[in-house]
Amino acid sequence: MTTERVPYHEWQLNKARNQASRSRDPSTQCGAVIIRPDKTLAGEGYNGFPRRMEDRAEWWNNRDEKYPRVIHAEMNALHHTYERLDGYHMYLTGPACDECAKHVAATGITAVFWPRQEEQNNIRDRWSEKMARAIQTFADCGVEVFEVEGEKLWPIVQLSTVETESIDPVGEGLAFS
Image (cartoon, rainbow, N blue to C red):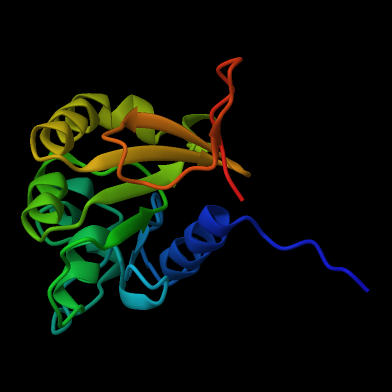
């Protein structure tokens, strides 16, 4: 009996989605995982208040109260990884913001992956300026960025360090196995 395997990058994104399910944020649940070069899990995180802070519903439901308190998924994953991250990859449930991009790039992570934009709900509209700055930061720091859709990678910032088997000549993303 042969079973279809989930494509590799989608499998890693599913791990990030699983992390996102732990967030108590009523409007946006985000998750992040950090993957070693040998494809094992190094760290994980989701958006939430600091560990010792009480989770109050009134803070979660008021953006003026929530935003100053929330630690983004990327930052939580970095805080919960206890090793050097040179050459590691990060998988996110959505695009990084400009603040997280600086910290991710500073750690030595070389590639970031998130779902293809069509999968995103209102994130693109609300955060487009911060996303654009994040992508520029990644490019300036030599961090590759890809959107993932099934078995295809859509390069946002590509420096040819991420292995891909072939490039689809009709512009439908990078095919890989």
